[in-house]
Amino acid sequence: MMAEMEIRPYEGFGPVDFGMTPTEVEDVIGPPESRFQRFPPLEEWLYQDSSLRIMFDSESQFEFVEFYEPTIAVVQEIRLTGSYAGLLQALDGRGYAVTQRGAVTICEALGVVVGRERPDRDDIYTAGAFRRGYWE
View (tube, rainbow, N blue to C red):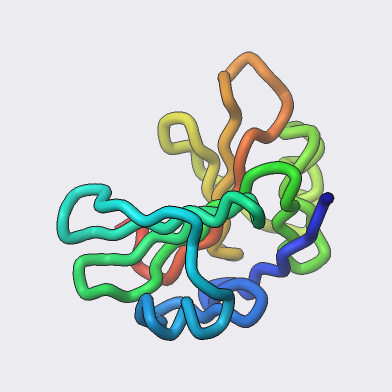
């Protein structure tokens, strides 16, 4: 089942706000299917049924969310899925600049990032949203 998740730039997604503690996130969207430490003390939660991954910083505050198909991330009515070239065109058409950082493309103005599985492919593999200062 495909679901759309609305990203609120630099604020969060749906009912979840950046800066929330793990307890607050769990109170809003329930417990994850799995939890693990990325690089202690950083924590990561997987919600496989919702096709999303949530990451907490060293102070246990929600800082990043990543969406996988079939969940579609949407920011200001722009769907972060499908054709990579099409997304770049849509962002450019609204005056949003992007920056390449390795395998990902970041739109700082919207606080979002998209990634492709391989640079020679046009399809978007994953999309995410981050709080201010995440890439600094």
